Structures are given as C-alpha cells and as structure tokens.
Length: 336
Image 1 (cartoon, rainbow, N blue to C red):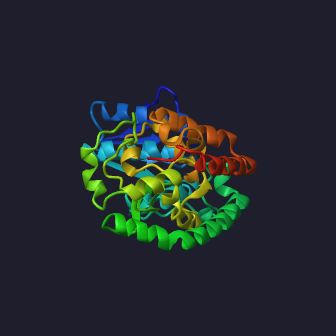
Image 2: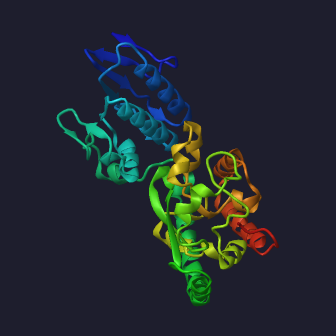
C-alpha cells in the first residue's frame, strides 16, 4: 500500500508496522516544512507505525531547514516511544549529519548493517569529505582568508587590552575573566563563544529572575541587574566581544555573519527560522549596524539575518565591517 503526501514529495510504503517515507532530492526550507507536516500526519495516522524509515536515497542536498525539520521530527518520535531510522544516506547529507553531530544521535542504516555512526553508499573520497553547501559564503576561500587576517589583528589588539580589562573586571566583581557560553553556529553545530565577563559570576543561574523585554526566541533586558559596572562599559564599547576573534580564527564564526543563537533559542524555532543557520555566525552583521540592542523583536532579527544572506558578497562584508566600526564609536550605540 502506498500513500502520498499532499505535495507528492513524500510517498510512504507500509510493511506491517513499519512505514518507509521516501525523501525528496532536496531538503531545503519548502521541502522541510512539507516534511515536518507529512511526518506529523504519519504519527497521527491509524495505526501508528512502530518504526519509521526515512529513505534518503534520492536526497543530494540538505540545508539548515532540513536539519531543523529532522531534529524536530526525531524529538517527537522519541517522545512517543517510536523508532526512526535513516537509510541510504548519500555523502552530501552525511556531511551535514556528521558536522552537526547528528550521526551520533540518529540511527542510520545501510542495506546490510545498522550503526549510530553511519556508513554511506560508495563514493569518491573527495565527495565524502567535501563540506556541506548551504550558502556561497561558507565556501568562499577569500572570505576565510579575510577572517583569518582579521582575527589575527583582532587577537593582537585583544592581547594589548587584556591586562587593563582583566584588572578592571577582577576589581569590580569576583569571578573568571572570560565568559563562555554554548551557541549554535553553521547548520546548528554547537560551539563555545567567548567574551570578557560582563555579568556577575552566577548570571546564568539568575536569568530566570530577570524579565525578558524582547519578544520571540531571544533574551534582552535593558537594565539587567546581573551586568556589572565594568560590564556595562565593556558592552557599550563592544570590548566584551574581543575574545570572539578566537572563535573566528578557529572557523566557528566569521567576522561578518548572522547573530549566533543559544540552543534554547533554536529549540523554539519553526522550520523556516532555521534558515538563519545556513551561514556562519558573525561578530557583526546586519543586526549590529541596524539597531543593535534596540532590536526587541525576534522577527526583525530573522529578517536582518536573511537579508544578509540575500545580499552577501565580499564587498558587502567589508561595508558592514566599516559600518560596525562607525556604530561602535557612536554614542549610545552599544549593547546592554
């Protein structure tokens, strides 16, 4: 028995209590939305399949929206006590799963074995190790060179300012010099972002006691009591972000990109909102030069990030870098 999705892109074949859903050749935002909808309909069907197989044999492209839909569907299936398995995963999709660590979480089968660290259909070594292609910026060698040069210069400046900033932070409040926080980067891959500490040492534990003045999937409070006196100066001048040049040098971030969200933010995303993770997060970007902390609506953040992706070029990156420098030196333009 064969069923088809409303978009006719997700045909389903039943065999006893197992349903096999064929995935399309691409899994970007439009297909990912349909994937999530059809998957939910499958879980609401009668009888509910005890095992769901996702056949990726035809799929050659998956971006962050596809990752978002896959993660969302996996969580729902796991919560309901059913099993989901990926089959026939091609190298371009496997590259995404490996980079994001999903190959260690999802059950992935070949035609002969089942493993949590998947094997892939035969292909050339070059194709296997080629990075995922989600946006031209992530494969631009010139952009990467610009990031390396810029981060080395930035780390040099950070080294010069490290002692006076460190002394000021230590004299102002007890705690470590640096603050590390888990953020989601390209395709949702998690990394630790580094900043000079601008809050009290137990700020994360106190977050639930501070009202959120922003709407949507991010947190802001103009008069956050957790911010120290030195921290307010560091934020106003953006000096707290200097350690992020280390993230740029490591390739986790770029000088220019989208705003790096926290995992809690990403957990609330609808599939289309995952598009902002198609590029590397940046130390600066559209949101930095168009309002910075004055932005209170998450939809505006999404729009700025997607606009950056639409307009991206090396020249556009340089323009945003120059605008960022001008904004930093403008009075009352800093973060809070």
